[in-house]
Amino acid sequence: MENNLLVSRLQQLGRHFPAVPKNLEQPAVRVAVTGAAGQIGSFLCNFIAQGRMFGPYQKVILQLIELPAAEKVLKGLVMELKDGAYTCVADIIPTTDPMVGFKDADVAVLVGARPRGPGMERSDLLQANAKIFQAQGAAIDQVAKKTVKVCVVGNPANTNALICSQYAPSIPKQNFTALTRLDQSRAISQIADRTGAQVEDVNNIIIWGNHSATQYPDTFNATVRGQPARQVVNDDKWLDGPFLSKVQKRGAEIISVMGKSSAASAAAAACDHVHDLWFGTVPGKYASMAVISDGNTYGIPEGIMYSFPCEILPGGAWSIVQNVPINEFSRAKMDKTAKELLDERKMALGI
Ligand code: NDP
Image 1 (cartoon, rainbow, N blue to C red):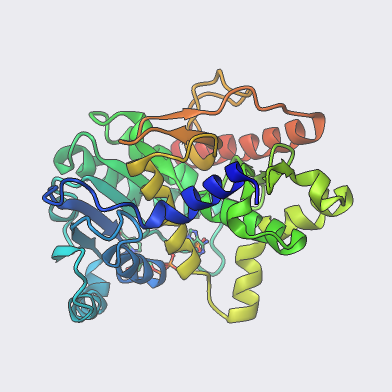
Image 2 (cartoon, rainbow, N blue to C red; image 1 turned 60 degrees about the horizontal axis):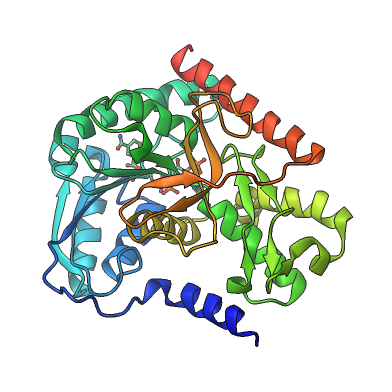
């Protein structure tokens, strides 16, 4: 194996098991999770407790927020977390009060969201969630640390993150992000399967736009074992058709096979997203996440939470990777998903 490929592979494999830090006495990280007792939330709490988000040496205080209706399930989750005797867990604070749950939070992962009910229109769903994320934004604004990093998972995740940030004016908009990492992971896994590569050998696939069926998984800049991915795959028809719809509709495919929605993979992706916000990305490797658009980048309108390729410094300062070549095929798909986000913003916020 080429030396730089080996280094890259070790860097990626090593992400979740960093070297023992010099200072083992770092203060515990306070992580708030909403919808903690739900499908994704339960996996997420267990993964965090096992060190997937901050590594095996970092203590965490789990601040678990649920609706009163789910209080009993939350109690059971806490019992299980305690029985796990996880060495990463310093304390667990279960609550139905967001003002308690977000208090002094360093990180907030917002999973709880209103699911689409029978006969519910998309606009009704957006408005119902707008209320939830307004209230959570206001609570975060009042009681979380001003440096809090917020990752929204609950759908429609991008627009929920936008609403949340608007109601937390004292916290920089850059601290609010939405999860498209699962889409990136799904795309990587499809390309790895197709080419016989290991997942860590597939890099820089970009998810542009919304975490919805309009998202655009872009392979034009991706690599497999350091070579251009499209050359390695050598099947443009598959990449521009079945591959795209496979990634875009993977959530629905899992429901049809398993009878319930994906939960462990979503929780794993949320861990990876926050991990990179905390520790930074490996140099030269992009992480897709939805961040606020400033209107000057890749022609995407201002003021929507749009998924871009990002590079992140330790501590969470992110920048959008510049000068990625965009061809006509990509342009049309990037604009389509941007339009959907503008429509969502209009339906949810009237702007
Ligand atoms: P899940 O844990 O399965 O899903 C939670 C949210 O994550 C949904 O909005 C879901 O969207 C979204 N999601 C994002 N990516 C994915 C993905 N790849 N696969 C599946 N879902 C994804 O829902 P549960 O109903 O099990 O749990 C939700 C919990 O949240 C409940 O315990 C409930 O009490 C709580 N809740 C809290 C609220 C609050 O804090 N105010 C409000 C509403 C609920 P989608 O629906 O599109 O699958």
